[in-house]
Image (cartoon, rainbow, N blue to C red; front, side, top):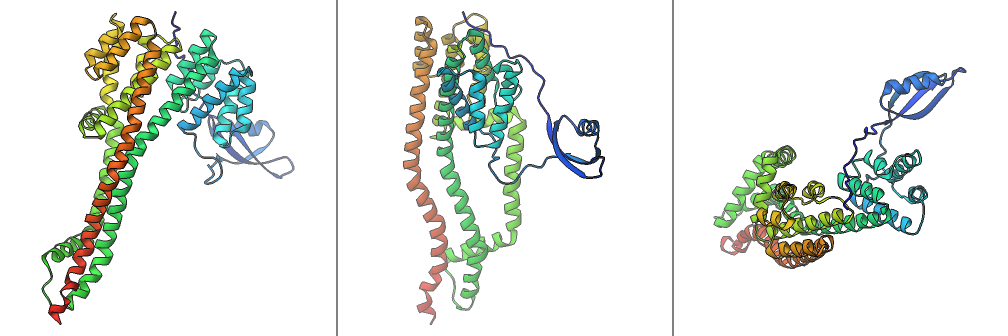
Length: 412
């Protein structure tokens, strides 16, 4: 029987670390730090200690040291370490204590220590993690709660670790596919800007002393250089504003995200890559939650959020309603018209044989491998194309500047 994994709402742990300066009875300055919800509580606590408050302020964050922020990879490592230690028979509190002591990042050490203290005080692991939703999302917490309820926490933690590791690997592949061409285009734009603003004007001054008619291509490039040099602040400002506006609208407009994701799915090369990645995420997330005992209907919402594409998210939420009405998963997937026939057939076989989680895992493995192969193929294809692009842009500017020099013989 499936285990219901409805997340319980817990008050957020929004305490802030304050530092204070105070005087004791002998008039000596005493410095310290205290964790509290606001400054007034700190002042009251310091006075209760018999000190006279001089100043209270939030503790500044250090610029350097091992206080790098916690990322998704850190959480994946946490899940793997915790699963391994619990499978080895270590009690959860002892496992968390060992992990806290071995953590390299200070924020990670503090996070694990806080979770350990909460578990020691009587909270379940799911409730302790639920207080830190910035790091442990709804999917993570629900899976842990289902594992605790079913008495198979170490098994569920292992599945969470596999899920996180696969998710981060897939995310890394997508970033790899996008980063290289974007980085090259940015570098090409910077190099071209430097040539247009600083280098070509020097050649222009040199050409003015020749007294000869310049080639049309050279005049064209000089015209671009003059326009760029005169309006560079508008160009850079416009690009900066466009990026800011894009990010601003993307964060606040569901309609824009839906439109953007719809366009991305139609872009050659990147569209199929995005589609395969979304299907892989869908299958991996749903399979992990279903295998942990989370009912299919309840698993659909976290699964929708994990797909990374607005169209797939809306489709999965519609599928949830269809399943809640009594239809099997395969029917809901068919009606969405986003999943290939082969994927629907594999899910249908999984439902009929009672091995849906296993079949979803195979779908995820297959599509993750396809994403990996596409990224490798894209890298091989884009490399010569990008080199050709750089050659045309930068080489074109260089040729435009040297064409008049080749005609120097006719001037002398």
